[in-house]
Image (cartoon, rainbow, N blue to C red; front, top):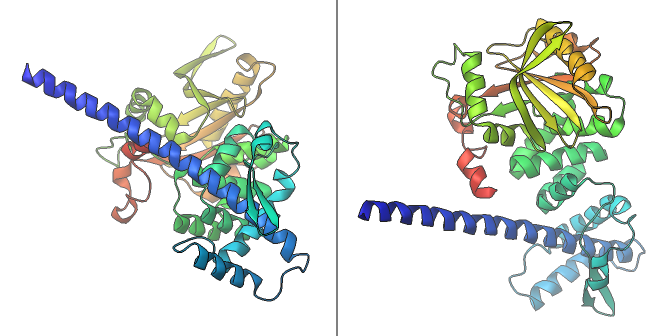
Length: 371
């Protein structure tokens, strides 16, 4: 009896702890959104007055020092950071400012400042998808600034913001990826630029798929010998964790998905539907290094899916070859004349990462804590 009660206590503690962590995470996201709204509003105020030459020399330094005197312990309002707020406003205002007033705007918080007022509104951009809006508001200001100064186009900026929000990048990791130009290097491992005509769909696809998956649930006893069927079985048994690893908005349609073409059967390893892309996504699992012949088989599957499975209002199917390793030049040559959108990604378990990198990415338990 005592053992049963102890078990119930453990479950209760686990449930309450999960609720507390989930609540804290939601609160943290809300606080970050409020900070961005405040910084944007202050940036707008500073831009208006400083760009109109209404401020004298060292104005921001004087304002910052005065704020520190009146609000001891205040952080985030150095003259350097206020210049960053101004850039944050000036870079994003063409997108954020084009929207009509929202219902929330009639109950906005107005902050007096001398004889002027600073109006803090929720940040909303009409041309953002709901996911892009959430990504934007979940990304810390320090990350936003690094993206603004190092990624010149909107598509690149949304790409890195999405990575920061969904893969929990540190600022140091973001700077490293910006320096290595991950946005353009990731295009080498897919042919989306050449095969997806719709610009918005193409950019969504570029942001959706990852180049490498770290699967915490995956158990590989011998890295030199990987059984494809065993990997598939582990993925299916841990399908929720796999979807968390590959991205958002994926719906699992089945493994060994049966296709019949002219009376002959074929089987796709894993088939998903992505609601954001409105596309079927076929994933072929491989236990070794990428080979050019893999693409021919996947191209065939995509043609069959588009002919027999895709609905009229859906976009063309996309294929991903998920393998252990790849030669990027070989991938580039293979995809050069392919007509169907497809890409290559590699996978590994967290135990295969070098020791110094194992704690950079959140574990499955960490993700559960955060989400």
